[in-house]
Image 1 (cartoon, one colour):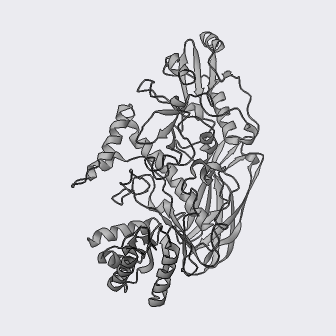
Image 2 (cartoon, rainbow, N blue to C red):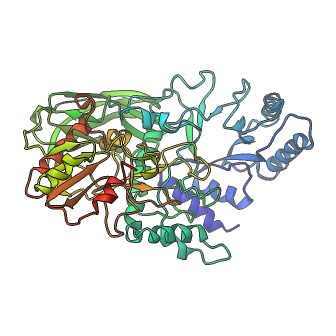
Image 3 (cartoon, one colour):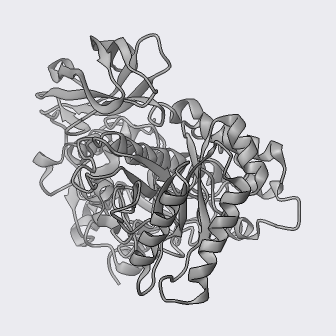
Length: 575
């Protein structure tokens, strides 16, 4: 009931580019409307419904009565712009009930727009449809979702999923998790305690990885941000789309601990993304690029259309829309068009064209598009790799540990052991690894993988010198993650960490690896559970990672610091 707290919430929403707040299956108090009026934030109020309706039971009458009370009490607030019965309805005749409910209120009070419920169903007499289809991971899709099953691109939109006779608003998009921020534990100073976080922290400490909690938070948070960017930009690329609603900008501590917010439960930043970056892709005006892919070879030419989504309330007259491509040292290419941009989206604004032939080394590039003289700016990372690889001295490469491996290691040779498809289920192959972050949480979505939170590595590790990265998951890791088996390394020494680690669910906190090195007798061993063998001519990121590993193993920098008991390694792939 504190005005300053509601003001804090609405300020956070606006800082992160949002213009309205949905009250999931409830109606807020007076102070929430008052502060929204001041802040200029639109409100969707729901009449406390999340039930079976249309069955003739007492709740059917009650929702009418409750909606009357809500409108009588708060109906004059200018922020009160949208109303629905509630959330995700069901019941024998719920569609008929909701259609009558919408018809009743449209005829009685035209001050706001109405839909039956958030999530579903489509009602011909509603002012807009709330759809659970238009998002990059729908309920139950798991590894078959767009972000996990399709090679990274920004071509897709929801044009074929939306109805054409009314606006569509996507329902509860996002739900992407980050690792817990254990610094929050001390913020719980009242009756409520973060015992869940204490359990997760103790579990991480028990696995000897307590010192990695901040790194897990940051790396998983950057992947979470990438997933939200993909979700929101797909909405903005959809012609005549009505809008989107995140399930939450902040974490939801209940229902299995759903750490889906870029803000914590106190509506505060967790440190890995701030409002100025989030507003690049979540704003009233957003520059967009339709990339056919995010990973390129240097014998290719990038051709990607630029678009503007303009919901600023007026035409951007004579807007100068510029783009640039840069590496870490300098700008490599740029272009600009000048045009009017009317209110709406899918507004063509030229195209990015760049011949990659001048890039001789594996390179991460930054593509930027901005409207000159305004705050509106957006950016993406893409990667360009050499189409012809350098010739290096090969180690002995095998997918099994046999007498030949022992022989070569005893002779002091280098061995690359590829375990993809060989890892035992109990040693990691049954861990559901994908590219995206965890959806909602594993307690409630245990049948909806991935059950992991992206990768963590040292971006300056010599084994990755030929594979530019920032130490966490970005699109160049999509193929790597999609064609890998996790290796559970809990039996390894507690201070041992793999070169490429997969961040596990905070409930299980397993030490998961995709790539690690060790001394082995007189020789040196690299163990990799990523597919570095099949269809590499069509998998440029995997081919480049393999090249980076081979170049490292052929160099004098390949000097593993630790020695793992060979039996622990063999146990990963054979009983």
